[in-house]
Length: 274
Image (cartoon, rainbow, N blue to C red; front, side):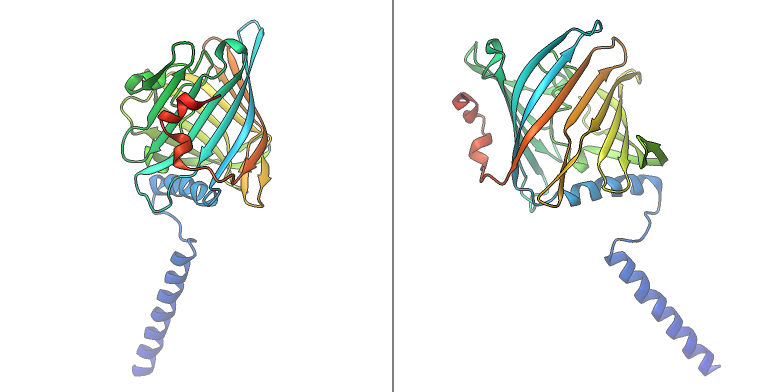
């Protein structure tokens, strides 16, 4: 009996060591679908750590239901949040360069994980900075199918999650996850997100409004890898499911690690935009 007991102790000791090793390597399965859904988005976030900052040129193409187009040129800049901060996330600056009538219009967003994001819009024609707050974030951004909320950096803690299965999208095996905004002023009751299993990139999002109606669909395509680690899309296409209007954001000229600082993303810096 002593020998058998000794073997039993050794067995359980070995199993315990294996369990600890798997936990350290992150290979244990979440206990439920809520945990698994969150774990998927935590992995998306983990893979993007350390980019520091980047900028890109974007063409915004707006189409009405008849297919008529109007185009705008944008500069988009992002500053990574402090990795040690549990509350403050990334900062973004969007500046319109063309057409002339909206040149210099700019939007700054400061993302936060435990309170509402801060957003300021600079309108050069009026020479003033307007704060975007509350339910206004659900409104259309300069007439596009993207809302102010859509353009804010996405923090993991902004949502609750539920993994609902696997599904192929655009010939890629994907996780399918429901995420529900925690912000009471959000324009959405839920979003259904497809994330490819190979690289953890968002491929598609369906948006449901406050009446639980399927209102918009975002498709993300043309991903390219930068610095051997960071995937960035070439195009985001948002289609309104109610009226057929759409907006494409076509991104080019990604440049990373330019040495940007918080001063480049302050409310006061909006007035210095040229």
